[in-house]
Length: 354
Image (cartoon, rainbow, N blue to C red; front, side, top):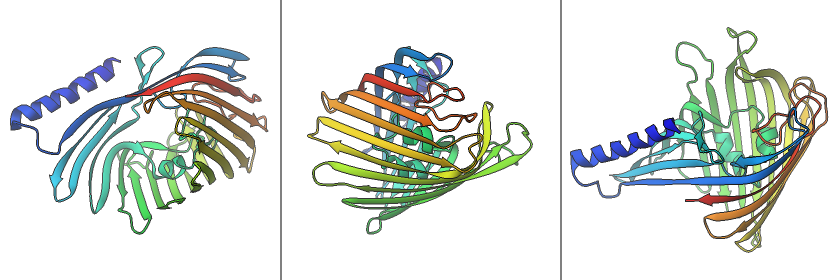
């Protein structure tokens, strides 16, 4: 929390210095503090050394975070803006080392250009196809994005304007500093949206250091295809297909070679504005079944809206790891299952957005 507090103070001081130097704030400028607090009671089974565990969890439906954001009208239809999102554990109040977003951007009729830590093009393409919109219990997050990048640092991204429903995204991330490709990331996406149909495709290539041989750089290639169709009664079927091939790493803990494909079938239903349900099924097929393996997973959820800002929810997730591989898929990134385990989890909680 010391890091978060210092960052917040710097932002507020910067805003004060701007006003003091130039007088009144320019017309059309803004500075906003918002965020999300998400807490639940969680029961985990077969998710580590303990056979089962009950605790309080932060961020099951949405990551608990603060958001500082602002924008300024530059004239001519152009705006400058920023977003800064420190994360925290709402059950303890402690800040997390990794910030969710930290980027600065310019946008206008020509498109949108952002620099900093931000979501990848594939996260936009697949996020809309995730019935739970990327919740902690999402089997799309925990199985299909298993160690594949979905948010990167030191990145520059361009998002084109809409052309008859079509738009594109390009991203390049510089990774480590110096004359090395370690951490470099390239991605491109094409999206089409014209109600009731959404179609998105993203392709990306990443370079990682080999954990066992740090001087060696290894590459990975991921491709994503998403389709969503929205019926007038609030039902939205979702589909996502993903192929992966290469070396994946989460330094300094784990690294592995893997290739294969996975598919997701899901649905979300906004029943009446207050009652919402979602379901998602993922089948992952690994070609080798050595480091990671073939598996099936399911997520079920229900939300009840107390207001536009506050929800009560119940979430359930289960992953059947079909092979006794070294790195099994989890139901939540807050715990790591051991070899041979098929974890499950249920959470009952509340989310408030401010």
